[in-house]
Structure formats: C-alpha cells, structure tokens
Amino acid sequence: MNRIKEVLENKGVKQTWLAGKLGKSYNMVNGYVQNRQQPRLEVLTEIANILDVDIRELIVSTKTNDQRT
Image 1 (tube, rainbow, N blue to C red):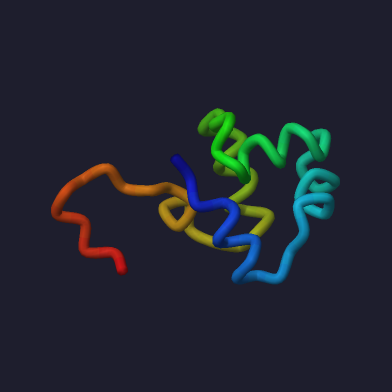
Image 2 (image 1 turned 60 degrees about the horizontal axis):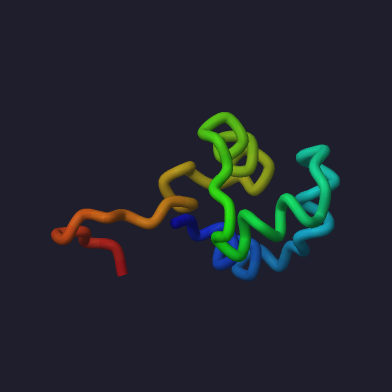
C-alpha cells in the first residue's frame, strides 16, 4: 500500500497534474492513488522527486512497531 493520495492532498496537487509530470495516463495514476495498482520502485522514486518528498513518505509501513503518526 502507498500514501500517494494523502501526499497529493497535503500538497494540493491533482492526479491529472501528476499524470502529466510522470508522462502516464490519468487512469494509471488513479490506480496508484486508489491502491489498486502499486508503482514500480523507479516510478515511486520519480513521484517522490516530483512532489519533493522523501520516498518514505509515500510508503505505508508494515512493521508493527512503526512510530509514524
């Protein structure tokens, strides 16, 4: 699972804008945002660079002792 939706909302960025920056279709980006599809690591890295966030902000931790709030 990823946190792309939350990061986009926090940044005030639309999925269509991100799709244009990535050179991908809106449907592809929407799949990422809705967690129907997970981007490859290279794409996730590109999304993090475009949104100017650490890649870790886009990932949901599966560790039970995660300190993130």
